[in-house]
Image (cartoon, rainbow, N blue to C red; front, side, top):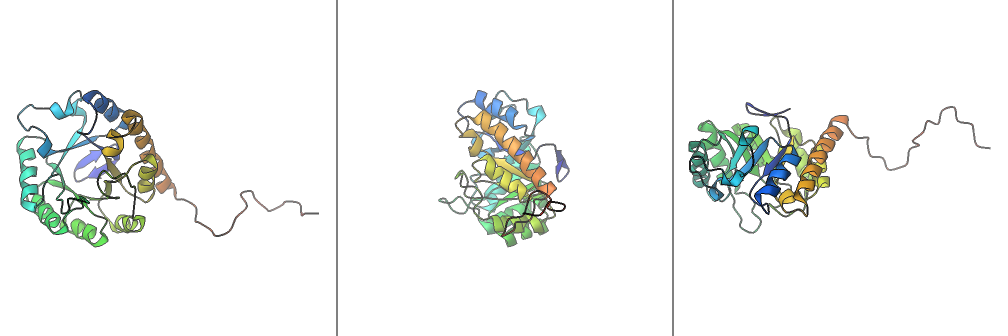
Length: 255
């Protein structure tokens, strides 16, 4: 069970929406992923009462919705976007995303801190997208963010985890859930993130843009399980030399 604020989740995989070829593929991929959480960009959907076009075919009663502030370049824009989603009755949980670089889509650290602080004051459950900056991640936690979401690599790049050292430092110092967000491309990437001790992952392009999104969604679900179990089990220490895999005690001496 993953707990973020007062929200309890049975799946550690969160899934984005909006990049699928059609609604049928999206519906089947969501089902295959086993996710509890669907995230979406508030600016890219209609907030008219009763509008569910972005989730056509999905039973929204089964999911927690995680609106995000994608498209915001300032704290003010991010806060306004979050409040629009709240006013539409979508959710009091929000993913804070304030982009500072159009080429890399990396977040603006100053505006991200400001937006997170304001939304916490407003009573939101705040999950903040950030770079793999160890100090910034700690400051977001100290501020009161309910989860920190460091990028593995640039959004949509599929490059995987570029800096496992930083990511592991973020995880080891954290007392709140760490959700690896952005840049993962394969089940191996997802498993690696979970083996490092991440509490969960958020995916969009890696599933939606895969050759077979439904099969990839299931593969990611299994990878998250495998990586988490591997982390909890504890891997053997790496050694510079070989070590016999069978006991050597009682073995007849060589002749």
